[in-house]
Length: 251
Figure 1: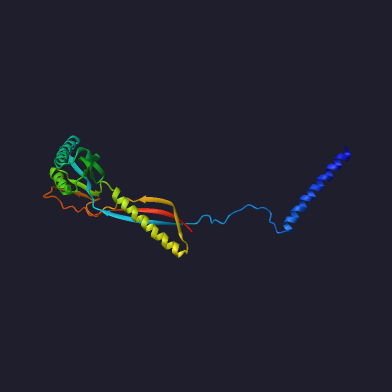
Figure 2 (figure 1 turned 180 degrees about the vertical axis):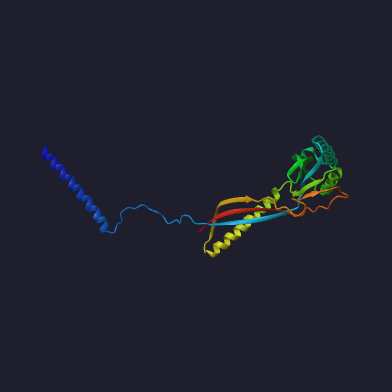
């Protein structure tokens, strides 16, 4: 048994010697040992730009907040006066062609007004009621006539006229196309400056801005005693802006 173990050990050493000799011979003959291939593709890289496009259009509808404010010595008298006047305003809106679904109450308030002396409050002077409705006017040519009608019916406050486009999809599409064109120009300029060639688009993201309102009556509050004639309204022009962030590969 001892002789058999010794024979196995000798054979193992001989085999290892042969393997080492073969490896040394391969290296001596200029043959490289097998290695993992990594390739020569340049990873990462790219040009990212932000393009902006603006499209302009004429507004075709408007919204206006119409208010009725009343003051009386008692709560009952103040609320009754306010409701009576508001009923007349609502009737005027209906007569002007405004649909019920285009009229929405936006604010209602009732509070006591104090009287003051040298030492602070001395009592209640009366009660003030304010009722406001938001009115959508779908025919922009009627804006002036609607304002005249409600003030004649008793509305004594107008809080802004805001113009908009009922369907802005076409303007947004135009602005989007202009933004992509702007992004392509910017990327081409950067590629030329960097002495590289643009590859395919890899990433696009979009931001649609709120329409820029024209200057006019929007945002202000106007108290009115009565309207002798329809006020002149200038709808102006709206602009829609779209920004796109685009990443191009480079070659």
